[in-house]
Structures are given as C-alpha cells and as structure tokens.
Image (cartoon, rainbow, N blue to C red; front, top):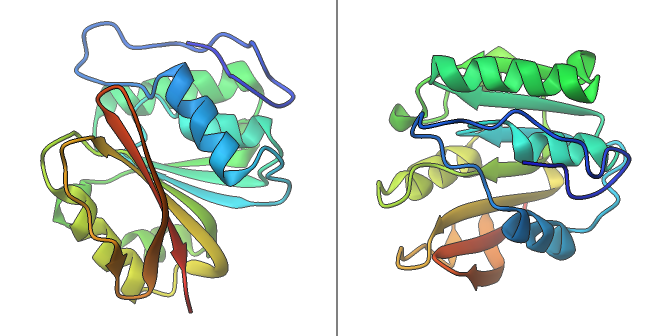
Length: 185
C-alpha cells in the first residue's frame, strides 16, 4: 500500500494482513482525489472508520493541516500510529478510538474541531452511512465548504440528500461506490 499523490507520493505504508480491514484501493483513492481535488492545503480532515488511515494520510501528503482518525479496532489504531510515523506526520494526526456504530455525537466533544473534509468508509452492507450522515448534518462539526466522501458497496442505496448534505457526485469502481456530499449551511 502506497501514498498515491502529493509530497509523499510512492511512500510505502504498513498494510493489514488478515485483520478484517479493507483499505481503499489505489484506483479508488486516485479517483477520490481527482473528484475533490489534489491541493488540500490547510484543510482539516475527519477520517471515520479509518482502518489503516490511508485516506487521511493521503490528505496530509496533499497539504491538509490536520486529520482526526476514528476507529474502534485496536489493530487499526496501531496501523494508523505506524503509518503516521512513516509519513513523519505524528503532530498532524489525532487518533480517537470510538465505536461509530452507535453514531457520531461525541466526536465533536473529543476533537473540538470543525472539518472541511470527512471520509466515511464503514464496513460494507451494514447501513452505517445514513446514521453517520444524520449525525454530521445536525452537529456543528462541518465548515461551510465541507465535503463528505462516503465509500460503500456499489449495491448500497444511499440518500441523494440528507438534511443539510446534498450528493454532488457518485461513481463506481468495481464493487466500490464513491458518493460525495456537499454541506449546505
């Protein structure tokens, strides 16, 4: 698993071996950044269901100022720490161990930030995305220019709009669907 763009392009990251973690493929990551843009200078990022942390690490490589990584798995937390060290961005990342299956309410209290970009990559087929979109749209956690990038199975039906979030792009790559939502304050 490698960083696909930015200052750290080509840098090898630690990837899981049989841990039940599904990192976003290189092709899908490249597609995401082609959709949302390559220059993320100064952007504050929230990486939910972070797994290896690769999506958040890609943003740091492209100039993001900070990333809050959230995952429940102890193995994921270890992988994220190792990968932040490999990228020499330990000071730019905060790791929160939290079970997001019950919602996102406490993340705002723990991180005390407003985010410009949110990645949402839960286990496929579990219907977590609407739950998290609901929480994101009702909290003061998104900036006026926020985008939410949700990764799901291409067979999952996601809402086109959800309260203050409007789907602005959706594309499929193999079995994966990327849905991009814009926040409308």
